[in-house]
Image (cartoon, rainbow, N blue to C red; front, side):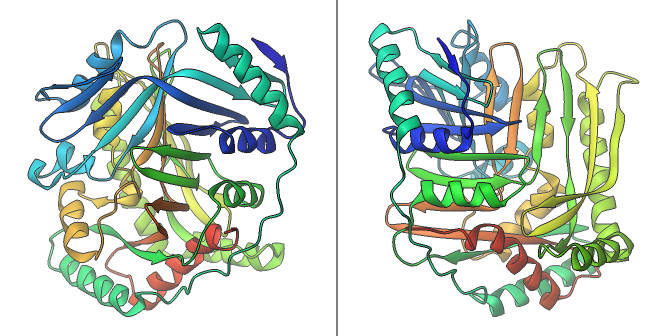
Length: 429
């Protein structure tokens, strides 16, 4: 069923998500918010098995030599008639794809094929379900949400940007030493910042989305994880026609909302040898990875070292695209491009091993992906950064920075604080 569009799709999508019982995924792509709920089929990938729920019960299946193709095969019969799968891939999937499978602990990827789906844009509100009772319920929910007036939310004081500062400085110094010893060329190190008290994920998301300029955004409750965020870049985009692209962002300066000040910081970013080097080695590996799945002669450079504004920061950005080789699908592309170079390092296996050693808390969903997968072979995977996370009674933020030989602990710590502000300024309870 197609209903008229709305003037404020963000407000409607957020209100609908708030009224939805989990599990659910709300995903924004190019001005359309898609809300998936009521899992008809569910798939959870572990290092040693894949668990699926089809109907009332769960069953276990072996994971083959190519884990993501095992996922693709399991989804093949479930994605039909315009259906899409929604879910997340945690950073731990990197160990299964590129490193030591024994280090890939816990759920690595969690997908659902929803029984109910609402897509909200300024042009139309599409309600999709095969159940007549669900259709009545969903259209009533859309009408109620369009009239809803959100209760006033109270801003939460931002957490201290100095949390674990000394630990982070030491980790950066250690990484620089290891880079100089030739163990790897670049690594992204992050730090976790806890948030005290209750946080309203939906009010935080709506306020943050109005202030940020993300490539994608999302709110989800799936597999015991709740998250809202404003992704600065996509890990991979694949169209139904087999066009694949990736968008590495590396190299950072703050944004303050003052055009003169921000312009000066942009000029400094574009001229800084450390930032240019950090971006260049990320670009080189991204091109190598894309080449591995590209049809000969199809690789193109769409943008190179442009500057993208992403909330409280601005980044050097490039984009590359290609046509998938015959016989390959979106999951092959994700397998080579995940995790994002800009959240792991160069080379990936060594960088991911260093991350596990040098950081003081598992990443979980941070620097993984929130993704959608279509019956037509399309895929859209947003890098999970600039997000607020909740699990049980804990709420936290996380931010990282790319470490290269020219890095200094103080500047990399400052960069994490700049990135945290993309979320910390919009926390509400």
